[in-house]
Length: 473
Image (cartoon, rainbow, N blue to C red; front, top):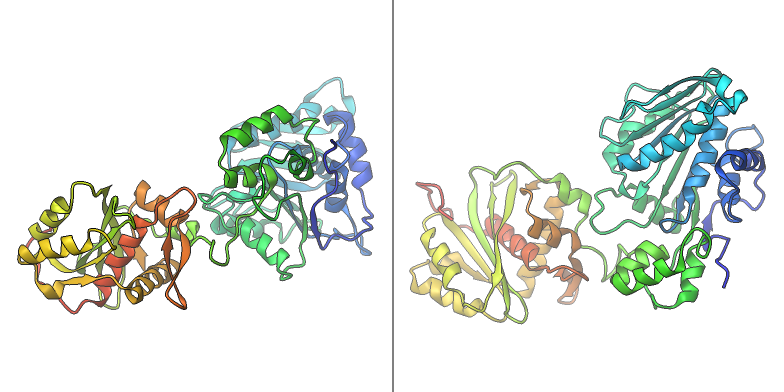
């Protein structure tokens, strides 16, 4: 079986690509090995020229499953550009990726058996974080990992975002203007990556992908990728979406991946599948926006409220608390996530211990909720301080939390259980036209649901008990 050598999807890539691609491929072959049949097409697209002898594609995105060999095209593009006097900024997310690219590209210039290249070399800077190859013709390749202040005050002609699935808005904003005033007045931006995982903070690559696929962008796009998870054990699909399978990519290794990975993970990592971000299966909150709301410590002041969410089968219960100030910000935090086999004694005792400070407790769930309410009433928690969840409340709470996360008017501390729930929960239909948080493929929505209930309670309750001391929970 032969691997597919042509992309499964292209956008804004003309059939005819005239430029320096063939020359760059021949040059790279001499120093980095012969390309696989599919690789020169990427180089042709990167180096295609228009009628003014400028780059035809000022920006281009390439999405391809891991370990297929896109690095050959990166090396070839950098090599050709530097030899033609371009200043290139190569960026990635991880230091080992940058180090490897630097070593492979500096090697031929430092090789004294390559006198033409060696004579052209001005300097090689090997300090970590400042690695660079400088040529006497003005050509430059700088290698760096990304930061929020990357490339400020510097000027380049070409900007390469490798591992683009992890590129954040701040990193892009700090680096993209660096090519706006290049001396050649022929800028180009290249994004190379794989479909982002749910825990990827960066959203730039996903947004570009969606804009291209929805016809909202004219940037060039080349992709090998499945449109659904499908049968992950169907080996013919492996060859469809991995152009280097059977050559540099070992089929036995892929078989091992298919046996050990969850289907959605295998589809994303090996079949180039982009998980949906719209409809019933979309993630409820943006990972990047949730991360942007993280603070070092809890909010001071404001009404204190709790949210309690029992899982549908009653086996688990999540408890969160929130604070909110009228006309100001809010704060949410997971108090505990526990098994509910032991009943509601521990939860009720904690809430009753702090009843003088708590404005409201919102409880949701078919199993355990009524028992907890009764224990609170028996312990003299004011009836007006207890609200039982309903379809309308669940809808309102989810929407309120999502709106505050998007607007960055709420905050939270780092909390693995809550962070995982917030960034991996999906939208589920609630009522006729509303939504609530639902369990993701490998996460529970209970923690983020409890946080949304707590926030809703803090924002909407009319009770405002005076606090004479800090809560002891």
